[in-house]
Amino acid sequence: MRARRVFAGPAARLWRALLPSACLVCAAVQRDVVCAACADGLTRPVSRCPRCATPGSHGACGLCADDDPLDATLTLGDYAAPFDQLILQLKFGGRLPAAGWIADRLATVARTGHATDLPNLLVPIPLSPARLAERGFNQAWEIARPLARHLGVRASATLLSRRRDTISQRTLDLAARQANLRQAFVVSHNTSPHGLHVGLIDDVMTTGATLREAARVLKAHGAARVTALVALRTP
Image 1 (spheres, rainbow, N blue to C red):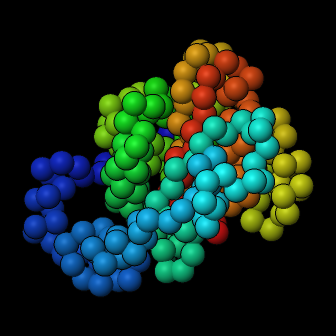
Image 2: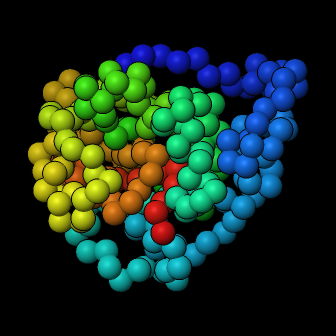
């Protein structure tokens, strides 16, 4: 997996002090990856289902199955305009500093009310080899690496992999998405999630089919708990 350097800590603060930046959401010229106004708008408190993060749910949404392989989902906000630009700029524009910003904010969300139940291990949703070669990086891994540092836990880019290419999920309904992902993921023989609380990292959660299939595979290999940590959630 191609390594990309992302400035963090004192280097990041010096970089921002020397050069202005255009907000990835509204394009306002200021000193950070996302301006303060957009950051506040994105992360405003919203009532969500604790299991799937569906907005507008006061407690459980009532749609999640009792045996859902996802135990919880944490997110920054909704995947909707204008905040979808944060993901589009990262995934298709190669704006990797967005991943570091997302990781910093997700760490805050994870610690708020969950400090005693943080994941032991972070695992990104893997891309197929062909998609990884085409894009040059896995946006979920670019988020997972700095998030692991913030939370003081391990991250693995190889525990979970795709055993086959799958067609894009964007045009598929839920049933087709589930069929498309069946047996798509495999756990590495060199590592094991047995007994661990695994944090699954992805950029966007739409129907949750991808995250649930990955969580199902992890649970089948002994994971004690799986929490999805996603940048944005489709409302």
